[in-house]
Length: 378
Image (cartoon, rainbow, N blue to C red; front, top):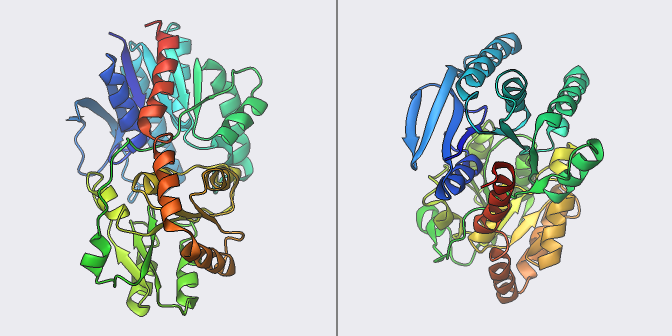
């Protein structure tokens, strides 16, 4: 039985992609452990969904704020993890910050170990990365990626960019961050719990309430909408939560709902009429992204309003499952909302049901397992 370390530099509390990959590998006979870092209130070792989770070192991001302190903890974590996983058969390195572990183990401890590099974003073009840090990140990835036996990306555009950047590797495999297929029984949770009238159309923003995701633009958009038939529900948590709550207290068409557990998430998602994904065009990683929230909306069988970003636009227009905002600003979103209200609901419903059959984890799992079969000779 091949032993796999699925390594991630977070405390592994709600990383759905890493969990899905781990469960898929376990199902076909791999011995999988998730390797994460410690955090407040978490045990160093636990079993979750039958997967062993091992946490090394301790990093409370709210307390540890200085860059130097974070770097010391990070380097200590790399050392501890590398020592622990050096006798494994396969290291699945999620994001660039775990790839040094693969290099260290392969170079100094176990030359036969296989490395899978799973880039969850366009790692050298992520939001907020600039200056000397960006230069060093590019140098680091170019050096480390040579040691990966397989590379995985989360959108076709990012895979193509990686092939251009690193012509010495094969084109990365595409494993989208889609949810498992689920038949949906439509619910009406938001109307029932928030007192929203049946005559109103509910637009849902679901996910992290943080900068770069168009939260402020959405608030301004619904502040300016005079038609009381359109309302927005923000469901999630993050740094902009206070701003969202404040707006919900001041405006009748803006609502806040706290994040819910994954097992009931789609019940709430399906209670909306449209899902909104307004990622801002602030970096190449965002420009080429295909967020998991987009696929969650589709699995819940609700159409979309998205930013005019390459991959999301291509998905919406190819399958006719929503509206692309021409501009990611108040006027652009108001126009998109108006168009959304005029769409044929029955046609949208039929199109989305077809898309669900294509974009689900069961389909992405096939790609992942093919990759593992190739590197492990199973």
